[in-house]
Image 1: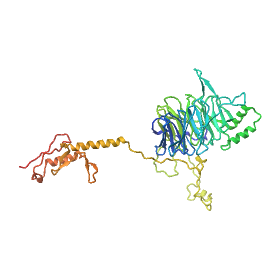
Image 2: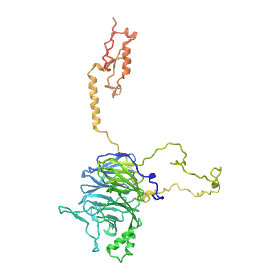
Image 3: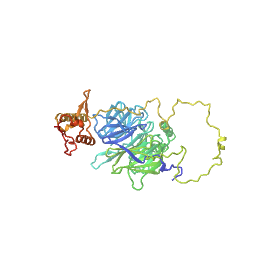
Image 4: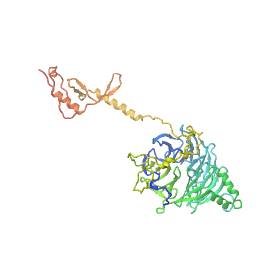
Amino acid sequence: MNASIIDPLQGDFPEVIEEYLEHGCMKCIAFNRRGTLLAAGCNDGSCVIWDFETRGIAKVLRDDECSSPITSICWSKYGHRILVSAADKSLILWDVMSGKKITRIVLQQTPLQARLHPGSSTPSICLACPLSCAPIIVDLNTGNTTLLKVSVSETCNGPAAPSRNKSSDGITSYTPTAACFNKYGTLVYVGNSKGEILVIDYKNGEVRAIVPISGGSVVKNIVFSRNGQYLLTNSNDRILRIYENLLPLKDEVRAIDDLSEHLHDLNNIEKLKAVGSKCLILFREFQDSITKVHWKAPCFSGDGEWVVGGSASKGEHKIYIWDRAGHLVKILEGPKEALIDLAWHPVHPIVVSVSLNGLVYIWAKDYTENWSAFAPDFKELEENEEYVEREDEFDLIPETEKVKVPDVNEDEEVDIIAVEKDATFSDSDMSQEELCFLPATPTRDAPEQQEKGVETSSKLLDTNNTGSPLSEEAGPNGHITNHASSPLEDDAGRMKRKRKPSEKVLELQAEKVKKPSKSSKLAKPKSKSLVDQDNGNGFHGDGLYDE
């Protein structure tokens, strides 16, 4: 391993299952931008939002018109909107805070994936990848759709028709195509069935560049890293590939225009491929060379330093983690349930996976607790290391401190008002209010429990009114004491339950009955009482009488 690479044993990646979430049968998941809320699409068409800090349900979104399984779920940039795609060919846009449906659009094909435009706080445009046609741009306000190109003809300058295959029954079917927005939503990157990445300006539908993938296999997934510098593809040849984005993040369209002007002497296909070579360059390839496993739901970590992919094999829940240099650092093995979706937390080293049974597993780092009372600058060593002390290390005033000049300007004013931007969210617009948490909504108790409580109290009242001899016991002074566990009324008229005496108390009472005091012998005749009836030993009180 290269010496410049961080030791994978000390990497900041998940290792064990911390806990799991359960609510119906969940199918797909997505974190909001800060990682404080986790949204999951369910098999019954509903969407549940979890507060990831407390691991409790914050809100459930449900539409009466949709009862089909959710196929994908996506947050808007600032967390105020959620877009879900369902198996009934519908797209539903939700307002998260109010829990109300904003719009519902029905497409001609079932959308396997839908993504909101990342450049707006209240996006009105989304990118949908249907099951059997080319990706489409959907206007959520009007419902208008625009079909994107998935290939370019080599014989003419115009675009070719989408790739299609004929099945055994003669019906023509389109190959599903993967697509995604870039970081700021200025371009759409499409992976087609020919093993190509097409860079498309979605506003005019023009193909601006083509990047061929080695092997020419069908592209199943395509996703950008959070910072927009790397592109990850998952192909049918069982290889994950990372491409480095060579274009500037905020002026990509202008940069492509400049590249095209310098290549005007080439024909259409050669020109597009030449521009593509200046847009993306292959950085790394990942594969399991032994098992040749297919990959599912690959993605980057929040900081882009790690790549994660789930095994698509049936009956196994395996998650592979690589560093960006291409080294496999960890294989997480979960329960014997197939994996269907994955998501890496935007900030923390946490991976969330969805099993075929609808459970969401939370994978976190296995931190070893160490409660030793070490000094703050103390460093534990795994093994002995040779240390050479400095010449003035044990001097009262080391020479290095004598000549040391402070770097801090003491006359400079310290700004305590300005807020420094977090590097993870450097592109945040501070004028936009971001939705990070949802208010907790109290829930009522189930009515069944209240009805059971009323029935129990009524049965106890009936038992108390029957006048059973077991409800009375003789006290130490011969008075009748009610020890039954029946409800009693206090001064305010409220029902209370009196505690039943323990066996020790009953034994003490029995001894006092056996040895009555002189005052009790001179007392008037008392009725015979049962003492140990509750103990089941058949022992009765003496019942003494004075003649």
